[in-house]
Length: 110
Image (cartoon, rainbow, N blue to C red; front, side, top):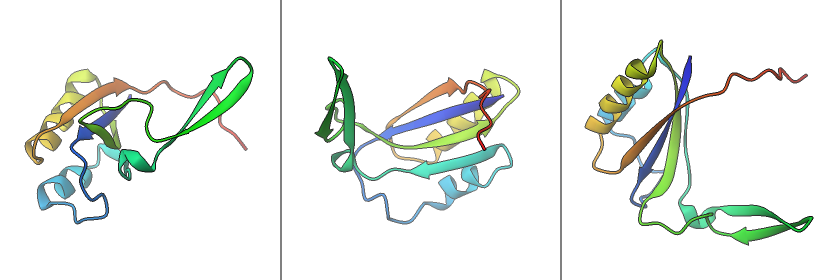
Protein backbone atom coordinates (compact mmCIF):
# COMPACT_ATOMS: atom_id res chain seq x y z
CA UNK A 1 0.00 0.00 0.00
CA UNK A 2 1.17 3.54 -0.66
CA UNK A 3 1.36 6.25 1.99
CA UNK A 4 2.00 9.96 1.51
CA UNK A 5 4.30 11.66 4.00
CA UNK A 6 3.38 15.35 3.94
CA UNK A 7 6.38 17.31 5.19
CA UNK A 8 5.71 20.55 7.08
CA UNK A 9 8.39 22.94 8.25
CA UNK A 10 9.64 26.47 8.54
CA UNK A 11 10.19 28.36 5.30
CA UNK A 12 13.66 27.59 3.95
CA UNK A 13 15.37 27.67 0.58
CA UNK A 14 13.89 24.66 -1.26
CA UNK A 15 16.72 24.70 -3.80
CA UNK A 16 19.43 24.21 -1.18
CA UNK A 17 21.26 20.93 -0.71
CA UNK A 18 19.60 17.94 0.94
CA UNK A 19 21.40 16.64 4.03
CA UNK A 20 23.01 13.22 3.82
CA UNK A 21 20.57 11.89 6.45
CA UNK A 22 17.54 12.94 4.42
CA UNK A 23 19.14 11.70 1.19
CA UNK A 24 19.62 8.28 2.80
CA UNK A 25 15.91 8.07 3.64
CA UNK A 26 14.89 9.18 0.13
CA UNK A 27 17.20 6.55 -1.34
CA UNK A 28 15.41 3.63 0.34
CA UNK A 29 13.59 1.13 -1.91
CA UNK A 30 10.33 1.85 -0.07
CA UNK A 31 10.38 5.49 -1.28
CA UNK A 32 8.72 5.48 -4.70
CA UNK A 33 8.61 9.25 -5.25
CA UNK A 34 9.18 12.62 -3.64
CA UNK A 35 8.97 16.30 -4.42
CA UNK A 36 10.27 19.45 -2.73
CA UNK A 37 7.93 22.40 -3.00
CA UNK A 38 8.77 26.08 -3.36
CA UNK A 39 7.82 28.32 -0.43
CA UNK A 40 4.13 28.91 0.23
CA UNK A 41 4.20 32.44 -1.21
CA UNK A 42 4.70 30.91 -4.67
CA UNK A 43 1.35 29.08 -4.47
CA UNK A 44 -1.83 29.94 -6.33
CA UNK A 45 -5.11 28.69 -4.89
CA UNK A 46 -8.22 27.95 -6.95
CA UNK A 47 -11.62 28.12 -5.29
CA UNK A 48 -15.11 27.49 -6.60
CA UNK A 49 -17.58 30.16 -5.53
CA UNK A 50 -21.14 30.15 -6.86
CA UNK A 51 -20.14 28.59 -10.15
CA UNK A 52 -17.11 30.83 -10.67
CA UNK A 53 -13.46 29.99 -10.22
CA UNK A 54 -11.52 32.42 -8.04
CA UNK A 55 -7.71 32.54 -8.14
CA UNK A 56 -5.82 33.73 -5.09
CA UNK A 57 -2.08 34.25 -4.79
CA UNK A 58 -0.54 32.41 -1.89
CA UNK A 59 -1.43 29.30 0.08
CA UNK A 60 -4.87 28.17 1.18
CA UNK A 61 -4.04 28.64 4.87
CA UNK A 62 -1.76 31.12 6.62
CA UNK A 63 0.50 29.18 8.96
CA UNK A 64 3.91 29.34 10.65
CA UNK A 65 4.74 26.00 9.02
CA UNK A 66 4.16 25.29 5.36
CA UNK A 67 3.89 22.20 3.20
CA UNK A 68 7.49 21.84 2.08
CA UNK A 69 7.19 18.58 0.16
CA UNK A 70 5.79 15.11 0.00
CA UNK A 71 7.19 11.62 -0.13
CA UNK A 72 5.37 8.53 -1.41
CA UNK A 73 6.35 5.30 0.33
CA UNK A 74 5.37 1.68 -0.17
CA UNK A 75 4.61 -0.08 3.12
CA UNK A 76 2.66 -3.14 4.22
CA UNK A 77 0.80 -1.10 6.83
CA UNK A 78 0.71 2.17 8.74
CA UNK A 79 3.47 1.01 11.10
CA UNK A 80 5.83 0.58 8.14
CA UNK A 81 5.00 4.06 6.83
CA UNK A 82 5.46 5.54 10.30
CA UNK A 83 8.89 3.90 10.55
CA UNK A 84 10.01 5.69 7.36
CA UNK A 85 8.47 8.94 8.61
CA UNK A 86 10.39 8.59 11.89
CA UNK A 87 13.66 8.10 10.01
CA UNK A 88 12.95 11.24 8.01
CA UNK A 89 11.99 13.16 11.15
CA UNK A 90 15.22 12.06 12.87
CA UNK A 91 17.22 13.46 9.93
CA UNK A 92 15.65 16.94 9.99
CA UNK A 93 15.38 19.92 12.28
CA UNK A 94 11.81 20.23 13.57
CA UNK A 95 8.53 20.48 11.74
CA UNK A 96 5.75 17.94 11.39
CA UNK A 97 5.09 14.97 9.12
CA UNK A 98 1.53 13.96 8.32
CA UNK A 99 1.15 10.35 7.18
CA UNK A 100 -1.87 9.43 5.03
CA UNK A 101 -2.82 6.35 3.02
CA UNK A 102 -3.03 6.99 -0.72
CA UNK A 103 -6.26 5.95 -2.41
CA UNK A 104 -5.52 3.45 -5.14
CA UNK A 105 -6.49 5.04 -8.43
CA UNK A 106 -8.95 3.25 -10.63
CA UNK A 107 -8.12 5.59 -13.51
CA UNK A 108 -5.12 4.57 -15.54
CA UNK A 109 -5.31 7.43 -18.11
CA UNK A 110 -4.10 7.08 -21.65
